[in-house]
Image (cartoon, rainbow, N blue to C red; front, side, top):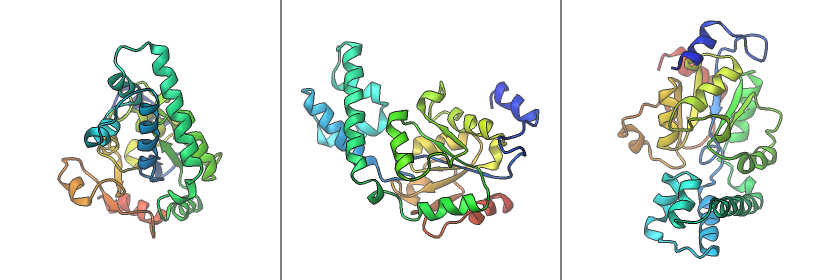
Length: 245
């Protein structure tokens, strides 16, 4: 933990609710709250082909999921002007928004709404920690009825060091005013799981992307693996901390 982060917590900084909360839930968006990967793949495919690029389907999934957006367009279109990359990224976001907007409720991970309401009824702080740009997540939060109901939202532009580094999660804890060790991070990918691990938080893996065996053999720790949010409640999350898992 950085000196800055340690200092804020060691000073006993009070959270935005006036008292230090007991437990907080911090959730990723892509693959965790919504099944959005097919939408991203489709948006990238359209963007690349429209701009004269070639999509190698045998490596496309790996290309898209392993590289940040800027690096991806640079790899597909080397030597272009920065303004061209900016235009392509804007185009990709516009295509993605159009795709997701037509099917948002269909791609919500089962049980999420009920789980969110359980967290709120227990008055547990709930935050979003995502590697998306604001334009890629604001309409999702609005469409899911989460705007104005979250205690913190951390996007990729809010921190200098994105996932898999821990700062996005640590920054969320700072803004809530809670120790990282009292937070549970919800993720679906190894990049996100690593970030949660490095932030020293409890880790809940939502199995939309990874099988439980893959997670167990990855070298990363997790405290709970769930296929989706069905049946999951705030009490289950608090139990992770009481049981010392």
